[in-house]
Amino acid sequence: MKIFTLFVFLMAAPVGASAVDSGVATTPPMGWNSWNHFACKVTANDVRSAADAIASNGMKDAGYTYVNIDDCWQGTRDERGRIRPNQKFPDMKALVDYVHAKGLKIGIYSSPGPKTCAGYEGSYGHEEQDAQQYIDWGFDYLKYDWCSAEKVYQRSQMQEVYNKMHDALARTGRPIVFSLCQYGFARVWQWGTAVGGNLWRTTGDISDHFDRMSVIGFDQNGLESFAGPGHWNDPDMLEVGNGGMNHDEYTTHMSLWVLLAAPLLAGNDLAKMTPETLDLLTNKEVIAVDQDAKGVQGRRVAQEGPLEVWAKPLADGGIAVGLFNRGESANPVTIRFQDIGMQGAVKVRNLWMHKDLGSFNGSYTTEIPRHGAVLIKIQ
Ligand code: GLA
Image 1 (cartoon, rainbow, N blue to C red):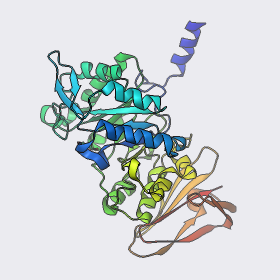
Image 2 (tube, helix red, strand yellow):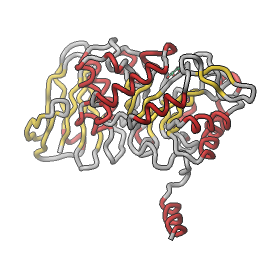
Image 3 (cartoon, rainbow, N blue to C red):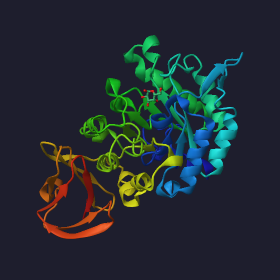
Image 4 (cartoon, protein in one colour):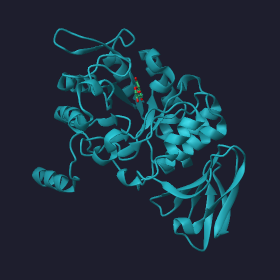
């Protein structure tokens, strides 16, 4: 019986599947990452506070699961080469246990180079040891950031470099989300899955400004065929609530990221956010677009200057549609149903507002504020 079960499992496993990618990230990973707000100042207490917030403020219910430590946790290696955390992280195992006890998962960060981007100890020459250490501590997610690997490897070696860590993780026998971060070089979307990546950054770093966020987000068009359950394009972490954009701009940020089936890693200080920020992060109908079981990344279906219409087909036959105004003044934006292959009368629902708008023929038009967005579902 057991042999039969194993046989069925092996037959069902997709080509290239391994212990690393089996069963994780079937929908885009959701959680929090320390970098966008705390950067190198992050401490174990900040991570605990983030876990406390997620577990108690509705984010966990909305699907946020991973509490991810980014750069700057590393100390020196001991005489046997084992990586030790720095004094800001006095007891890594206790921190992992704390986050797990909240029913959440926890992530860690390293680089294949000798140093991380912020100059901390990388995994170069210690890949096996580090993979085992992360697993021994109990981590569930690794972000592996190219950084100084640029100095010791050729870009043409990226695949083998990422594969080395993938193999080291696979050998531990524990499933772990493997997040590739090399800023979209070398068309990573074409080989990210083959090296065990569950997500891969497609761009350089986001910042908390409308111009940067929108260039990154709207430039994702064309990558949709590379995303799917277990393997996602990653246009970088969220800036919602960090203060550099207004409400309409953060609405565009969230609406676009969910249409892109992007990982949703909040990047703000969860312990101090406003109710308005929490609402932006936890709107269930909006999140459902991102986490939809069909796992399709949306694409642009129409554009008129700064006005864009994006669509993402959903598992229930509906289509999520984003109406965007990247322009400097309010504008009406129209979705023509023929652009998404729909004819006759269709039902339109506003997802942010949880409101049925009625039945429409041919098209639907609504006024969108400067830098704003409206997210609707069409059925
Ligand atoms: C790079 C990554 C960021 C962050 C920093 C940390 O810039 O792209 O997401 O991890 O390194 O140093």
